[in-house]
Image (tube, rainbow, N blue to C red):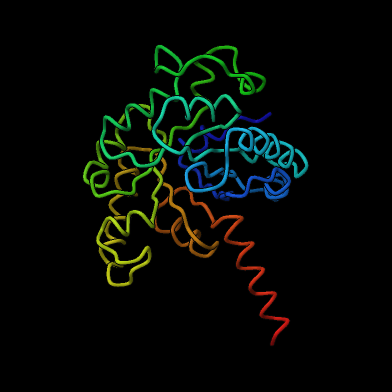
Length: 257
C-alpha cells in the first residue's frame, strides 16, 4: 500500500480531496475510486463515530485499489485530544486535521499526539495502521500528516509561529469559522470579503515562508481550483452530504419544470 500522502503534503504538491460526513462505507469506497488524493472523515461536525471511521478508512483503501489510485484516508478529529487523534491514526488514517487550535502550545500538543516517542507522546497500539506501516516507529511518524486548523482570530495572530513549529506538516483553513471570527454576520458575509481574503493571503504566505502545506475547505471544484492558483497547496471540495442534498433538490426541481 502506498503511504506517500504525508510526503506529498510536505513537498507542497498540488493536492485535492473530498469531505465525508455520512457514515456509510459504500459511499467512501465509491468516492475514493475516482482518484481524489484524499477523503477526509469529519468526526467533528459529521456523523462519524469510531466504528464508522474504521469501516470508512478500510473502504477508502478498497476504493483506491478498485480505482488504481493512491487515495488516502484522513480524519478531522472532534477536538485537540490525544485519545481521539491516536484512535484515528490507529484505525489507519494517514493524517489528522486538528480543529480549534488557537496557540502555538495548542499546535505543539497536537503534533505530540501524532508522533511516537521520542518525537511525541502518541501511545503505541497501531491495531490497523501497523498492517500498513512500520515496524520502525520513526517510519510510522514520517508517514503521518499533522494538519492544524486556522479558524480563529487568535490562531491567525500567531500563524507565523504555528507554521514554523517543527512537526506541523500543514495548516487548514476553516472558512466558515474564520469568517465569523473576523466579524461576519454569516459564514459567507460579503461585507467582510476583503478582510477575509486578506486573512487567507496572510495564511498561505506564512505557509510558503515556512515551507509547509496550506489547505482550505471549499464548496465547489471551481473554487478549489481558484484557491490552489492563489497560493494554497491543497483543497477539499464540499462534502457527500452537501452534494446529496443539492442533487436531490435539483432533480426534484427538474421534474417540476
